[in-house]
Image (cartoon, rainbow, N blue to C red; front, side, top):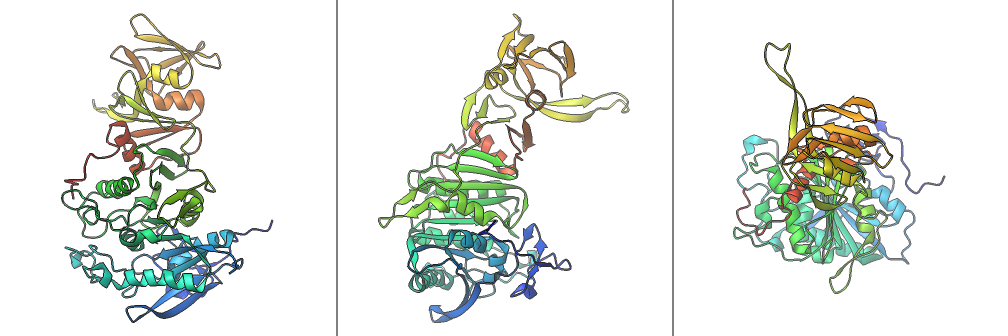
Length: 501
């Protein structure tokens, strides 16, 4: 098969798995650190130098695929590197060059002008150098027109438009960590020249997004945006605010600007937890990556392109147009999400009210432990009537509702009774994870057992939320938090005052 995307074998540097070694530049060396897996230095990556803005010389790296035809207009992607990294480092730690080979667009990877750190406002405010003594501190002017890195990125886009045949309606920017902070800053001031922006691992401080009275800080308007939030990202050194707050309000910021429906489509594929928001002005994609540390995954550029950028364009009048993408932004066809103490469930991308609230129930071991007890498991017990409705089963409670007979669509007959850990399946008895409970005239049973044992479904639990679907899916911390908010009527705040930082 003649692949457009071709993986090249590299020489692993197993003695250096901590950071970006300079020796990788121009070589076939590959490194694996902190979950980042590099590719060999791209053969077509060209180093460039020149004066673009403010009379200062800068360095950037251009990648032009072999298929480029100057007679045809192509998209442009600007990839902003993380702090202490380089443009070429971003080229090998992302898969942008591989997507460019497949799709035929041009990518440019700029170096930050000084200290390998982007001039991002607010990053070092109230920063204690003792928390990270080796971190170079960047001085950032208050007036954005005096910010050389911003002027440099603006000028670099113009230079690429002069040098190559660029489709002005399909210019995109992406960044990782501090590069994501820079991308967010650029989007807030000059996003009107972009069709979309994406980033991972570096959410912006909420006070950079909102005034004290809750007014949004923005000079560029709506924009198609992708936010990746690695589950184990953490917060920058010296920062004391909650990561939950930071993630939420970065998302709320673009939901407000893009006039998004607060209820997204949710899809969990493996460790990738997607929330797809549809906006009146532009769409938003939120991705939480299970078990992922600070940084970005090697496949993220493909995800950005396939799910969002491939079908996004900015028209000359400023309108963002979304057309069909290579992969549709659709939620899971079958999915149930539940959380403790709530009478609402997430069912097939809608909120469904149940007859009784869920209960997180502990299975305890009492005997042979010096009179004490140990928790052997925690299970989310939900109304049996709800589970029957989901799976199209016939539900026949007894007159006193303390027991019930359930007939599944495949004709299996089940018996449940208050206080019994047993379930009779036809005429066989099987133990459940925990006993059946009785609350408010309803029998409640473990959703985990019911869905796994009877229907062989995938069940993932995280942060007090259970997610059930028909394929491999691992629920992540911040997606669980998002689902909790949906089920508890906190999908979007009434205002942005008193954010809590």
